[in-house]
Length: 228
Image (cartoon, rainbow, N blue to C red):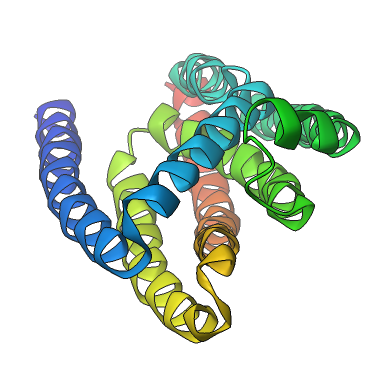
């Protein structure tokens, strides 16, 4: 019954948040388009393609890998194994994302000239480089919560990220627009970076406290399993 309850809670949270996020994205995109125009919006989408490519390099399937190994250790009531796995996965995600950021940073001029048609400043790519390690580590922690069947915490984190992105990006965009439309793309990526920082702080805090709480429950479960 508990497994069915967890299943319903997790599925419901995923479906509900997905619907809410789509609605928010539609209204937010409409707002941005009305402020910066179709040409700048097209440039922003080009930048986002580079952003998504960087995220693909930085994350490299870490989310699903963490989910699998954590769930396997959880099935054995081996919290020590979970702790060890998470330590290694966080280090790996940080290492890979740092390498990805360095690669983007080194190739900034090439990316701007060949993929972005020299429409944005290098500082836009630099912001993306700063965001990649945060996204990769958050992805690993999300995999941890999925592995221990607490997906709703990931859903809360995504909700916070979307709300923060809309509020912060809208404010920064309105702040930068008087300087010219050429700053619009920088403002949008900066807002995204700040929202990633907020999400990272949230996900790290709940991971820290969940890890301590989970540690105690696992030790009790292990003792019961040994003496029964």
